[in-house]
Image (tube, rainbow, N blue to C red; front, side):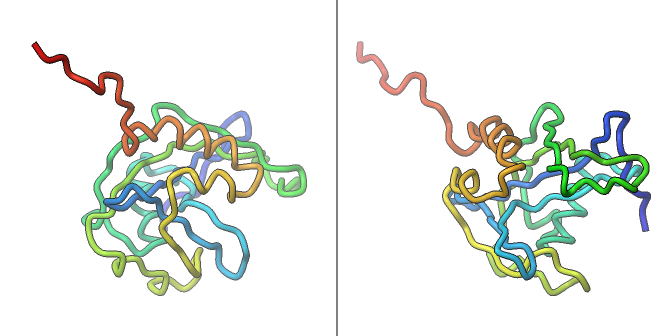
Length: 172
C-alpha cells in the first residue's frame, strides 16, 4: 500500500479529478455506489505520487480503465479548491481536513465503453455510469463541488469545444 494522503498547512487534501470524454465530446458521469449522487471520478494523491500517477491509479480503481485505454488531452494549470460543508468535516481528525485541492485531467477514451468495469475491486466507488453532454454535470453535482467543477470544466472546455475566432477566410 502506498503512503497516506497528506493534508496541507491550510487543511486541504491533494486530490485529482478526471473528466473522461468519448469521441463525440460527451463526458463520463458516474453514480456513487448505492446513492443517488453523480460525479466525475476523483481521489486523493498519496504522498509518494505526483498528480499524473495518482490520476492513473484513481482511474483504475474507480473505472477499471488503464493507461492504454485513455489519452491525456490536458490538465488544469493550478490547484482548484473546494471546502467541505461543516457537517462533513471530521472534527476529531488531525490534521484537520477542511476540503480538497485538485488538479483536473481531461482524458479521451481510446477503446470501447466495455473497458469500463466496476467489478475489479472489493469496494467499488460507482455502480452505474453514462455519457452526458459536456456541461450537464454542473447541474447535477453535489452543491459544494459545483464551483470547482465549473472552474475545471471552463478551463478544460477549449480542448473539446474549440473557440472559433476566425470563422471565415477572405477571398482574394
